[in-house]
Length: 169
Image (cartoon, rainbow, N blue to C red):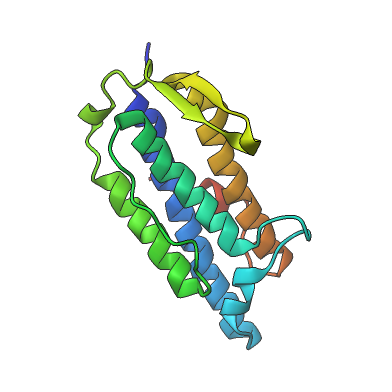
C-alpha cells in the first residue's frame, strides 16, 4: 500500500497549522483572564539561544509552505518574518493555510523522486522528495509546533496534549 506525497504533506501541515491557530485563541483567553497583554507572549522564548514564539510560528509556516513549493515546483509565498502581535501571527498562519489549500493533489505527481536541495545549518544536502518529507520537512515542522506549545505552556496558557494532537474529525 502506498501513500501519496500530497496526503503525507498538505493535510498534515494543515492540521498542525490549525492547531497553531487554536493555540493563539487559548493565548488570548489566558491573557484576558490574567489581565495581561497577549502580545507580550510573541517574544517569549524557552532559552536565550532559542527563537521566541514568533520565530516558532515563522519557521513552522515556512517549513509547510516551502516544502510544498519544493515538492511541486510552485513558488511559495514569501513572508516578512516581522510579526510582533498575536493578530499578525494569526494572519501568517491563515496565509500559509490558504496557500496549502490552493495546491491540487495532481501538482505532487512525481514529487517523491524529485530532487530537493536544502541547506540546514549551512550544509548543502540533496534528498529525494520522499526522503526530504520524512527526514526533514515533517520533523522540522513538528519541532516548531511543539516548541510553540512548550512556550505557551511555560507561560501558563492552558494547552495540553490533545491541543497538540488536534481534532480527529
